[in-house]
Amino acid sequence: MSKKILVVDDEPDLTMLVRLNLEPTYEVREENSALKALATARAFQPDLILLDVMMPDMEGGDIAAAIDADPKLKHTPIIFLTATVLREELAAPVAFIGGRPFMAKPVDMDALAATIEKVLAA
Image 1: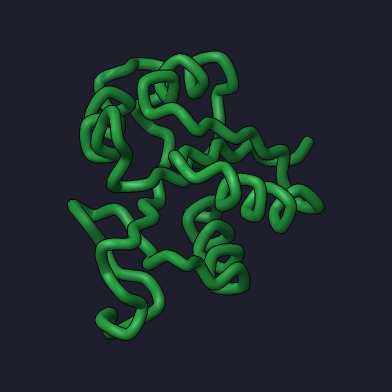
Image 2 (image 1 turned 180 degrees about the horizontal axis):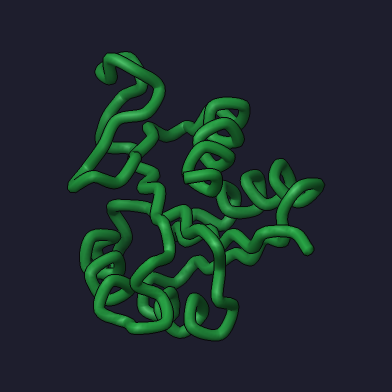
């Protein structure tokens, strides 16, 4: 049974690109509404969530806090995706916000796949 990944981002093109790249290995669901992200996570019960930091209706940090407060989701790892930091500004392809990894957009798909594998193996 493959691991399940929820991709939450307000950009449908990005979530589709990520889904198409990850689908050979994982079961992937997309959510483009920040307000629906928690309900989708509860229904889907992902093994990992890829979460945009900046969205129109709700910040990624607020969604992460709601996930942490949910007894069924609180142990679900989150990788933040953000366009507010350029990849060149990071010392490494992956940095951390509050102990959670984050990656700059546009996301390098090979680096994303490697980060997902590392997080799921932890």
